[in-house]
Image (tube, rainbow, N blue to C red; front, top):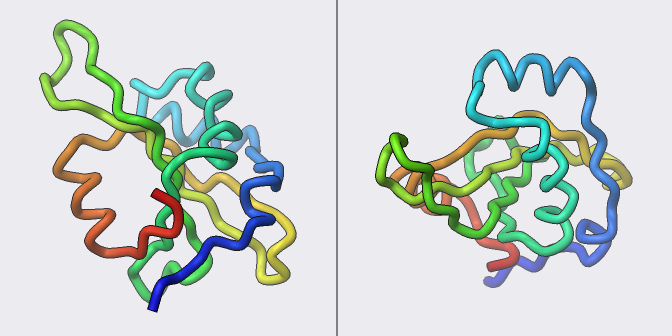
Length: 118
């Protein structure tokens, strides 16, 4: 059975708290403020996965298009990965974390979840 993404998701505004950004910058220093500005575009048009692990039943994962790493970084291609929690009434989206994912991590995320929008 094919799972479809609710068309409202792509039109929803994502909420990002200052705490989430501060926590993210501590845990993922390679993610800059400019990357946080890309999250809304990812919600509108990026790849969307439904998180597959049971305890994360209201989480969606949005992936940016693949990006090349800069010189001096790991040679792996990276994607920006935004984990978003949707409220139980499906009216709001909240960013949980934002990080760069390499090829191996991205494949593992896809295998655990369901692709809702390629």
